[in-house]
Structures are given as C-alpha cells and as structure tokens.
Amino acid sequence: MASLLCLFAYACLSDSAQFEDVTSLIPDEAEFALALSREHYSALEDGVKLMESGSDRAAAQLFNKGFQETQHPAFPYHLGMIFLQNGDFRRGLPTLDASITYMSNLPASAHSFLAGPDAGVMQLPAFSQILYNAGMARQQMGRPDLALPLFVRAIELDSTFSYC
Image (cartoon, rainbow, N blue to C red; front, side):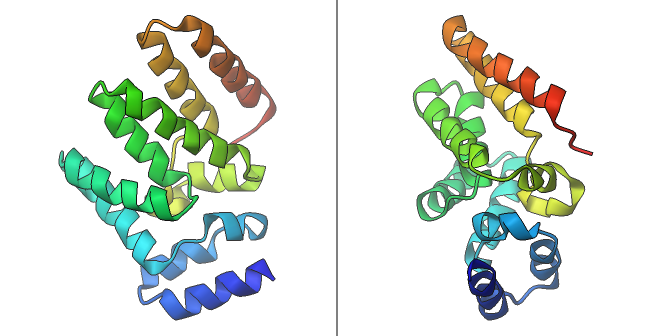
C-alpha cells in the first residue's frame, strides 16, 4: 500500500526528470520513509545550493520547513550541521539527534542509498559519520560522557555494515 501511495505521489507531484530519476532509485523497503513531495525535494535542493554558496541563514529556513513537515533525515541533518558550525549547540544537537533518530528507523538499504552517489541532493554522509559528528559536537561542549556512546556506536556500525 505504501508503495502505491508513493508512486501516486510521484506521479502527481513530479515534473522534473532529475526528481524522477532520484526517486526511482530509492530501495523498495525505504521508499515510504524517503519519499519527498516535489515541493520538499525542491526545498532540499535549494537549501543545499544556498548552503554551498555560504547563505546559511536562507538554507536553514528551507531546511527548518522541511524538518517541520517531513521525517526525511536530510532536513534535520543539514539544519543541525548549520547550527553546529555556527556554534549553536543548543539548537544544533537536538536537530542532529532527530536526524539520527530518523536514520535509526530506516532499513540498511536506505543508509546505503543515502550515502551513495545516486541520492543526489538527498545524499548524506554515512550513518557512522553522522554519529561521529554528533559525538564530536558533544566532545566540543566538554561532554565526553555523552560523546563516547556515539563514537562506540559509529565504530560498531562501520565494523558490521558495508556502504559499498
């Protein structure tokens, strides 16, 4: 049923060949969790472009909108990293933690897809790298007790999972 809903949403909302190409590559078992409307895909795409051009504030607004309206891990990841890079741990850590929660609920094939080149603007670092980034942020806050479990989880994930 979820696959049919996603296909319907793609058929209704897709007007870009790039959007269709990316969405057709999402693994079946992750399709529902990673599905984005055309509006949210455009917001993610525009946010990434703004972030790359140094317009963090405008990018953060787009990522925040997507974070509020979807459970796609890319929105809170990018938003959290913007906050953390600007030294805002109070907003950055919970936002990055939301991305970790979303990623934790995805099947392994979704992790591979998101870390691979086929993901396009949805591409994220490997899940272990996201865990490491969250651990480093806690380390920089002077909380190695909170960082250590994230580092351990990242190492365990890297030793048991291949992103190739």
